[in-house]
Amino acid sequence: MSGTPTTRDFKANASRAIANTQLTGNLKAVRQNFIDKRAKAVHALPEFEALRESGKEIKNHTLAHLDLYLEAYEKKVVETGGHVHFAADAAEARAIALDICRKVGAKTVTKGKSMITEEVGLNAYLEANGVIPVETDLGEYIIQLRGEAPSHIIAPAVHLNKNQIEGDFRRVHTHLDPGRDLTEKTSLLTEARGVLRESFLAADVGITGANFLIAETGTSVIVTNEGNGDLTQILPRVHIVFASIEKVVPTLEDASQILRLLARSATGQEMSVYTTFSTGPRRPGDPDGPEEYHVVILDNGRSAMLGGEFQDMLRCIRCAACMNHCPVYHQIGGHAYGWIYPGPMGAVLTPSLIGVDEAGHLPNASTFCGRCESVCPMKIPLPKMMRHWREREFERHLNPAVARHGLGFWAFFAKRPRLYALGARIAMKGMALLGRGKGSFKSLPGLSAWTKYRDFAVPEGETFQAKWARARKG
Image (cartoon, rainbow, N blue to C red):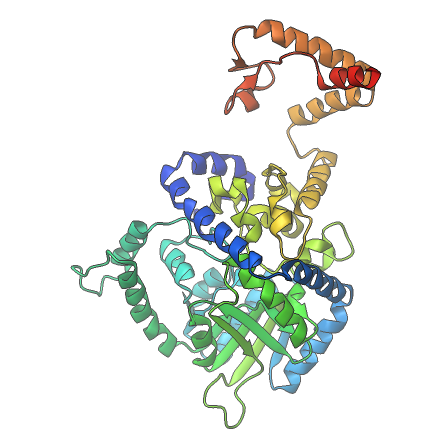
């Protein structure tokens, strides 16, 4: 979308976000609404940790045999009267969707929430080719009105408050009474429902994402809390599912196990309000459903992750638990990351898909506190993979020269313990003398990046190594 920040601008994006007091205020909702609810839901399920391990093994097994399960899924979809289209990249995925729309003469398309369609830039492409896409998830609808990308993968408009949304509704819904009362959240919901109802009835094609693709039955699964996904896929004549290759799981039982993890990790619910299984087009005797059922399965760099350092990232089920618990995300939100996937999962996935030269800043946007890994339902080692990206960034000389030379200087001493200990003692004593009576330094040569945002404490006493050595002797 126009005006969307890029990953290369991450540092500037983050600075602007931190300075935006309205944004940082709005982002408090992430901490207040997600963390406690998840904790309560997990506490109420004694087997949650066992389910995490089971979910991890299911995904690992599937990734080890991904080609076989994708073939099995395609076979089942075809048997039920559907069509499967494999897309190597974003351009192919967009072209497939447009071709389907053109064949049925579609003018309007309704869409359920789908990060894959965001990844391939489907909306802008359809609009440029004469097909009007209408987002039907409330959060996605709001950001579509604003011309923005999602700032969160399950709560796309979490960066906005009620007053901002009211302003957007009044700006866009000019056909409605300008004196209407929109002070209550329920009135905003009612207005969105009425406007979107017209789109549901007019759409020629419905597009949804997929939380899972089940190889055993050829079924696609979506989870929502609004029911818009159901209307999107049963009312139009054509239903198109967008999914990436790692969304496949072997059986219904496997999907059911992971579903027990998904909502609890995402929103703190036992299950989402709607969990919808779709298998093929309408059959004789069905009261509703599409006449055509298409599944577009996207690679877009994911197959290159198989068998490598970043394969574990393909276990991700897009629950957003990592970003909900991330102190960095809490301060800057999702747009600062500059692409579709924010937070810790984005810091690993984005460089994998668009390259570390484009997204090398993102793996550095971490305190390595480990909260993301501790809450991930799929036990993805996010900090470890961010470190791998930092290593690759360093090897390719993509980080600033000052950082590389500084690290090299530190490494020289770190490889020579006695020299390191001597240097540390001298530095400690020198800084203690220099800062005597101050308590902390407001600025230090070579450490301005640190002291710009925080004080540097004046060293007190001897070094840890000296204390440790003395303790051993004692």
